[in-house]
Length: 112
Image 1 (cartoon, rainbow, N blue to C red):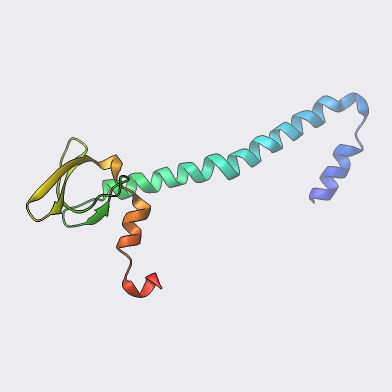
Image 2 (tube, rainbow, N blue to C red):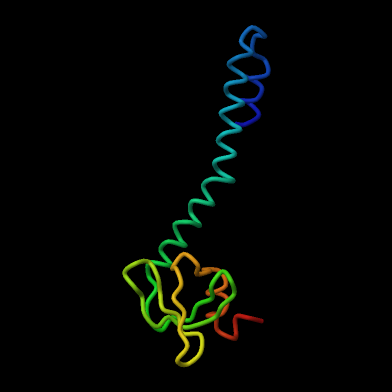
């Protein structure tokens, strides 16, 4: 199918060069959207869902590499993170790393 469409475009009249350029520009934009914009938007949606489902007792890692346990989820977009027994930090929810948190929460059997 791709080769037949390409043959039609290449055999077109030289006077219709604008149409070919327009189709090629559309193809470039489509490829850019498929490989760049869509995956990034999907990842941002997953990160937002992960942060919104944060609750007390979850073990997390921040983007700065701080490990701790969620002690309290505040309404102002922050969490109270217990880094040591009795030692708390107040951090933004957006500072939680979804990838690193998933890595530390994997069972030991999966880490091989």
